[in-house]
Amino acid sequence: MPTNQQRRDAARRKLARQLQRREEQDRARRQRLVIVGVIAAVLVISGGVWLFATRESSNNTASDATSSTDASASTAPTTPTTPCSYPTSGTAAKEVSPPTNLEPLNSGTVDSTIVLNGQDVPVSLNRAIAPCGVNSFLSLASQGFYDNTTCHRLTASEQLNILQCGDPTGKGNGGPGYSFATEVATDATYPVGTVALANAGADTNGSQFFIVYGATTLSPEYTILGTVTGDGMSVVNGVAAQGVQKGAQDGPPVATATIGKVTVPDGALEGTGTYTTASSPAEQAPSDGLSPDTGSVDTGSVDTGAAPPTDAPTVDATAESTAGAG
Image 1 (cartoon, helix red, strand yellow):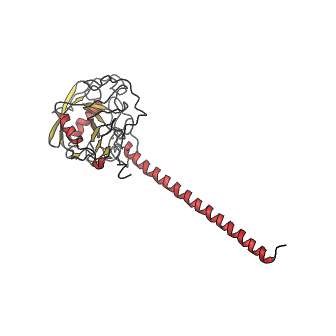
Image 2 (cartoon, one colour):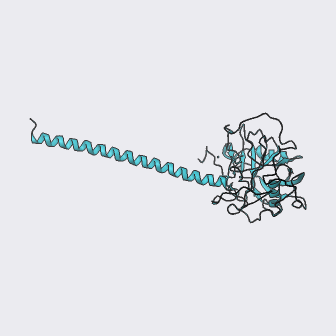
Image 3 (cartoon, one colour):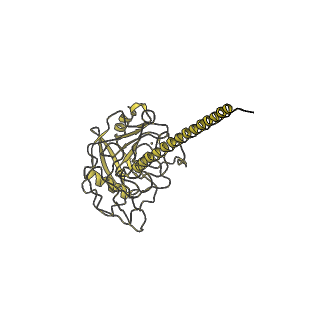
């Protein structure tokens, strides 16, 4: 029969075991809380980045994303009415007014010139495939929105090779303070020389655009404005040849890429088109060499090696921690 001392010792050992188990349970609970807190923080940060991507920020993607006009914007853009609409979407990165011509020409092309690093990059803008997008680009250019801005993003991978520009802040989350609908054919492709709008999803277009300089596989979600002509690609290739900072596949270019200005012809914003429906006027496939038959490719689940063009800022995953596409 155990003595009183033995009973007291057994009770102390039992209490010690209980306290140890309780401490282990408390420690595990604290660890779970830390993990939950980290996850919550990541979700909040990711949510912020997504806001960057959805409010031009902007987006895509090309990741791609992203953020039309302002990261702090909380009002989702509405689908434009017939034929064009440019609803307010956040705060403009640079003072500018939305286009006043809501029935722009929707046929033919117009020549514009992007002066990049002091060299001309001629661009043929196709009104027939993106009348609202071309109208916005011409309006922004005519107001000097793109003057003295930097191209903030370069990608270099097997499936995504673009130079992304159009954000006066140079951070990838700035835009004109308004958004507008996506105009793209279901079979659109993005060969070398394509100039298209970055976005962070349907109808989040703003000011950011990208120029395709190499093999690029994207789903048909990005409004095509036109194509680089003449010797313009040699200027873009000169920037691309120096790669991405820190040797990454996606991020700020090593080379300076400054847009001095974008010139447009006098009267480019004048004239109206013929619209017969209340839907987006651009339903036809891109022309002028922008849509060669490359076969049907489902890019919705393809790993492009980098985020698609978005209006959102991108992060070098190898160094600091991604295209809509604006």
